Image 1 (cartoon, rainbow, N blue to C red):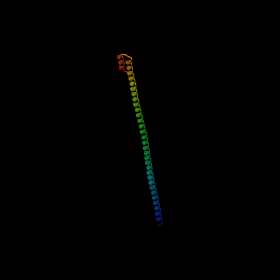
Image 2: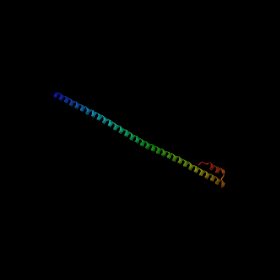
Image 3: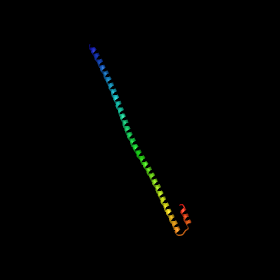
Image 4: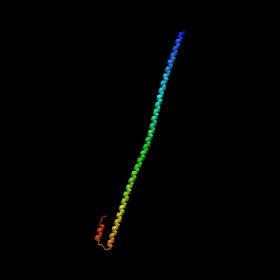
Length: 130
């Protein structure tokens, strides 16, 4: 009977050892799966943050490009306005010069008539283009 109890105790001890090994393996599997889940969560979080940073960089770059485009457009508009103003001032100057020439011509014709030069010479001066 003593031998049967010893044998039974040994079997119980072996079963407990086997149960402990199985429990330890199960614990290690659970621990490993939790580590993997945590690493995956960290990886997803890093990727999300990179997308946020990337999105912010894209927005910043977009704002810079829009500002540069607006600046270039303003410069083009300014250059066009200056060209228009320059053309207008040249046209005004040309008009003033023509007016001055016409006044000088009329004055000369009147002077020639006043000193007695024949009208055919004075008319020839009036018909001349400058």
